[in-house]
Length: 60
Image 1 (cartoon, rainbow, N blue to C red):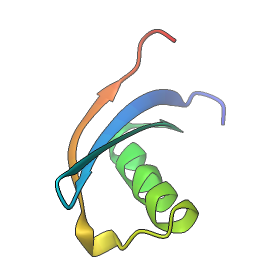
Image 2 (cartoon, rainbow, N blue to C red):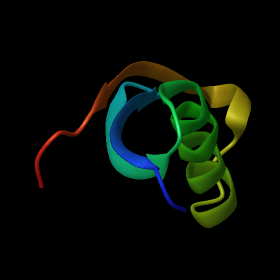
Image 3 (cartoon, rainbow, N blue to C red):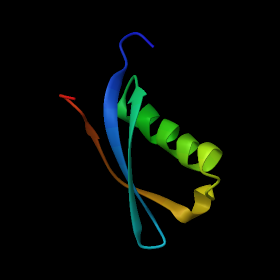
């Protein structure tokens, strides 16, 4: 999408640290997109995932 920024979403699942990069219009939507990737693409249970941090990626 036009105007989207890249965000690094950090999550935790059963003491396992997970990190992924998503494109979203803001940090709140980045959390939602990150959860969708983890649940839809990887089949993880949403209730078991804890988002621990989010930061905007300024450089690739």
